Image (cartoon, rainbow, N blue to C red; front, side, top):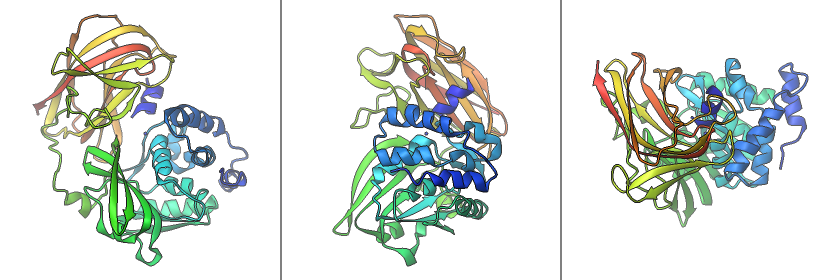
Amino acid sequence: MDAVLTRCITAIAAASLLLTGSQVLGQSRDTYRPLRLQMVEQDLASEGINNPRVLESMQTVPRHLFVRPGLREQAYFDQALDIGFKQTISPPFIVAYMTQVLDPQPEDRVLEIGTGSGYQAAVLSGLVKEVYTIEIVPELGKKAEKLLKQLSYPNVHVRVGDGYQGWTEHAPFDKIIVTCSPESVPQPLVDQLKEGGRMIIPLGERYQQVFHLLVKQDGELQETELLPTLFVPMTGQSEDERAVKPDAAHPQIANGSFEELRDDGLAVGWHYQRRTTVEEGTAPDGTHWMQFENTNRGRTSHILQGLAIDGRAVSAVDISLQIKVGDIRQGESDSEVPMLVIHWFDQKRQPIGQKSIGPWLAESENWQRISERVIVPEHTREAIVMVGLNGATGTLGIDNVRLKPEAR
């Protein structure tokens, strides 16, 4: 199950770049290159990343060196990985997507607001003239700066500090990319964006965020709403001062009946919607349901939703949903089958377990109700709910997804 779930839960820089990094770190050859090429083909190119320069940069940058040594075998799955200090390295798809939307040009000077890994800055290095990256956690920023120097990214400049204040002495910037989530656009970043410049930033409540593309025209920001996403927020004062905060003692599923839709037809509140459509008609609850369909074994078809949940206040949750299953065939392993999985994370955002509900294999023309009581680990502070085909082929309909907490 782990291999599939990890893919769920985001012009080439000179060829000598990767070799140099390997030599510095005592590696005689790049044994991870096949995994990196597979990642680019399966998780990026097939999911809409089509800028050749971006794809080539993703093929080149050694992501496994930007994660903790114990997680390197997971580096090329499409997932976020814990890097310590409550921060994560973004999934490869998210990095590539944000980079593509930014439309990097060889003469660009780019400001990147990062959470500490340095990976996004490394991807940008071969695409633009200068990268100025502000890392918000001192310990991670110092580590990222050291690694970027070891790997010979001479055009990446690192600073530790409050990224939302920008980097005044190097402004204005042609592009700004924010890889952590504020509640609204920080004014200093607006001020430091060059006229005609582009900014991509995830905005919204803690677990309900959407990418926004901002283009500065006549001093004003022209805004385009893009994909829903789930991002780690800034730490410290900016996060503490959010106007809307999640209620971790009373967690709920948002838009569990898929009645609330965006203009592009995607379901509000659900992230990384892959090979899904929201259907309209006779549904168990309301008039819409979520339909998953996959014809290639091993390919993802799923949705995710994050939520705050405090295991000190919640002892268990009752999870229920209604499903309709059609012609299911197992994926490439016994674990690649339709199901719902809830992942638990502690206060450091490290995974501390998971619970699966399913699998659902028997074909059914009518809706079936599924429910189960799930114990919540006491150290839990966050959770991610994932549901879908998980690599199986066939169709799956779901509706009326509910989570009811039980007080400890």
